[in-house]
Image 1 (tube, rainbow, N blue to C red):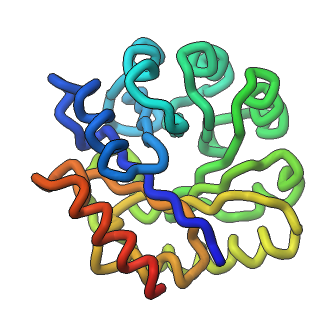
Image 2 (cartoon, helix red, strand yellow; image 1 turned 180 degrees about the vertical axis):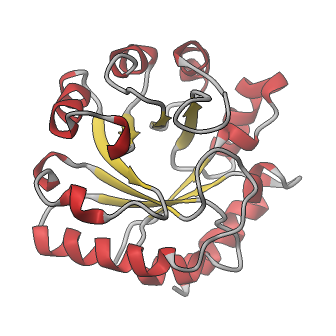
Length: 221
């Protein structure tokens, strides 16, 4: 039976009380904290850096899943590792040497992964599956929270699930973007096991009830 993980994205949290927010979602049942890093270069938005990761690290014991939407990526990877990240993922378009960037993440003591935008082909996986702990499928175009799920992502998720199963490796398959109570079951059925939810959780008044409702849908997936 699949192990499902729910990773609230702090992109939709109240930044004026971020420590309290991450404690609250973990108490409500979150498995990970998803940390979106944008540079206003690779994506048209600017968010947060290693100092914020370091600030929230003492507030939670669960893994911090850092999604780097920056270009280039290598310079910033060790900084996030030192700040307390457990997982670091990046977009293949943002690295000149994908294998080297993945190895840098591992050498920094973190799990490593690649992130695929809706229009990014999957051939980047062909020669680095042995270095991946996680693969992330973007079901929206990166840069902003609150977007709607792109249905075509289900096809991509199913394709990646087959690749993971054929590899025989224990690789997480995470989906990021537009995940809600009414579509999480279909996303799980396509093969995902880790679900990033921003406004679907932080936009609600009762985090525990929302996460329980998501898990209820996963139970019937």
